[in-house]
Length: 500
Ligand SMILES: [Zn+2]
View (tube, rainbow, N blue to C red):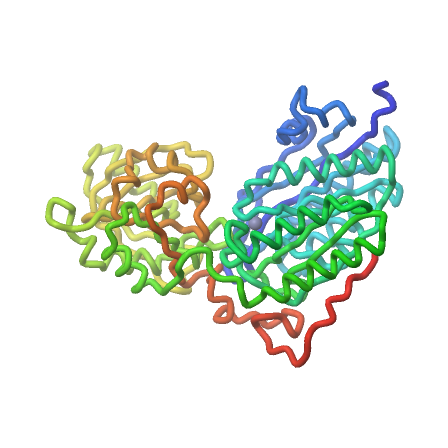
């Protein structure tokens, strides 16, 4: 039986990269997986999992990065060329692959290039030939230009933001690929772009209207004649013509997939003015005043403009500089002040200096270091952290050195490299107690589940940075005209699906 199993390759490159951030996502940003290590990365391909033995899986190469700035052209080209060369070599030895799972984010920006994922998909298609079924799996914050949809036989994305269904989506893409290999060959696709570009923080599926719209997407996928349905919000912090929402409904009943793609597209368009921030959103001053006046503890504030998990450089100091100057946090609680945690500020030199002070003097060592704004000094220059060191650890896989410097009632997490703070354990492992802190400020947009559960209350601070939530002040100038909310519409857009 084993020789009748389809042979399926896995390849891809995923990053969400802001073109408004001066950060560059070079090799150090990427984790590369090949061969068995890549296959083992997918929980649904673990030993004993139903899909494991349904095909012979080969890991080609996958490059994954935290969100960041644009990818240098040579880094992207090297990943693409290795994928292509490996596919060619393997196929020369063993014959053409039956299928390929293309695992991408969809919001990769490569310096000097538009639609990098279309280029990658086209290169993969050229390497495997027309007979291999390609199933593309994406984040819903990716963009879907026609070329990408065209080259993919199947294409889908997450239906939840936060992305609690990330693995489930990849598994669905793999399962649909296998079932088409068994029984159907390439289905038809109805593709359309919706001229709306919104930030993820306004399109969380926890709240309306996205909750109902995405429930509708899942319902469409179950209709007879339909294989899959997907709706992309698109990526708001790149400035490319294809940055906008998109719909693809895949299946064999062309009337149904066109009708449903156009209906979903129309529904998204009609709801465009109903999307609102997932939490009360306000400028810095109003957020801090509200948090201080509230009795809800801990009160979470998202420093959203420099959210590294959306592509911010992570070392913007604009908000931290203001917190350091805030009288409420200048005094420790014993002296009547409020407590706060700031997560986080990456600065390699400053983190090493603090680690040195800790090594020499231990807990309570006094430091006075300049930190931050090494990469993105647009909104504000470096800040001075003059305080006491309460914690230093080394070897965090993302952050390297992690230090906690207390300045009055404010505890600042200083790291060697960028790291998102998404889990309660990210704090408690440092000896911090976010549940018993007055105000917790995190470089994030919408709160990830762990933080959401901890927060007694929460506001989204509209702060500056590479992923500013106030899209209109970023200065996009290459979007397709018109795109809501950037341009005025003289008439209703046609919202017609194209069969691919
Ligand atoms: Zn996303």
